[in-house]
Length: 441
Ligand SMILES: Cc1cc2nc3c(=O)[nH]c(=O)nc-3n(C[C@H](O)[C@H](O)[C@H](O)COP(=O)(O)OP(=O)(O)OC[C@H]3O[C@@H](n4cnc5c(N)ncnc54)[C@H](O)[C@@H]3O)c2cc1C
Image (cartoon, rainbow, N blue to C red):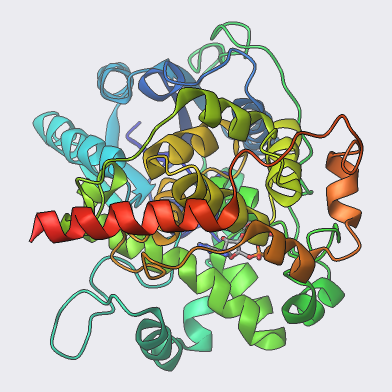
């Protein structure tokens, strides 16, 4: 019997899933698939990775859900092209459906998959699912890529209708009638963490549910207080892996808190920018900022990574990141600003470190925010602005509740002296960047 494969990637859910809904409505029996991409897994820094553990648990949940509904779930470990080629040879695959992914690696992979499937006479369909407006759906009046968030946000919210946030009916259609039970043994064993050479590492991830209503209602008052556990929504991991749908979280934010809605729209904005400028994943957007003579001192980088800079908010943040894989946005900004301006280290070093550590690591958001802090991006804080980490501390954690949680020795002789003096560091980076910009003209 001819089948339709639905390929889950960063959309690990059956509810409100655009591509899955289309697959289930296609009239062909659906076999869901997940591929543990060897090319990505080979680059993970450790054999015990909390993100892979999270993905693995979610894939297993999907498999159990599919089997309970009377279908079969395929999971494979390998290179996506090889896995898909093997599957189209083994089964009578008529179509493959998936949701769009806008990262440079993913768009190249999907172009190659489209060519491969075409060769085998299989139709490949991609759907917009992880954002509301993608690619060039929002442009400036003169047809250029938006680079001012305020203007983008205005157009975005004017175009955003309640209908756009309605859920896709994939959950209701996820039934025996639309799924395909492959005959016994045909699905093959699903990979385990061990069989892929990994170990379990569990870090705290909030359950895959919407944030509590009071968290959303108070968000604009609490978002910059890192001592509060519920000061922000903590939905970033779910959005990263698609265990929550962006429509769900936007519906809630649109009804209850415009500030939160705007923050979620930053995510669409950075994905849009990365899609237009894939080179900015690894190089500064602004050509005048591409040849800065960063100091890149290895020992100082190490002190930053380990939270030993002598600046309490920076150290607390880095220690929280190392221990939990999470960091509140305000503290991300502080540690990032400190690395690129005070230590004057290339933003790409920090971006890579975050990529290794963050549970919610998202290329577009990470690169976009790092370039913002470094003053190198399509949209940035002015390059000459250097925030004082101590002033930040006074603003966001005046009683040092957050700092003391992560740096108990603060204020004692065990705590190091500041690695560099703020005013000196500010002048050093501003002068070096100014010189690089003049030289680039
Ligand atoms: C240097 C730096 C690196 C960052 N790297 C990442 C990253 O790798 N992955 C990531 O998801 N976010 C990143 N962010 C953005 C932001 O810090 C996190 O999204 C947020 O802290 C996650 O916690 P939350 O879900 O409680 O956020 P909330 O404040 O509750 O916001 C809700 C959602 O809105 C989106 N959002 C909020 N702020 C931003 C922002 N500044 N940019 C883009 N989207 C935003 C996120 O999807 C977030 O989950 C980074 C920020 C900085 C300054």
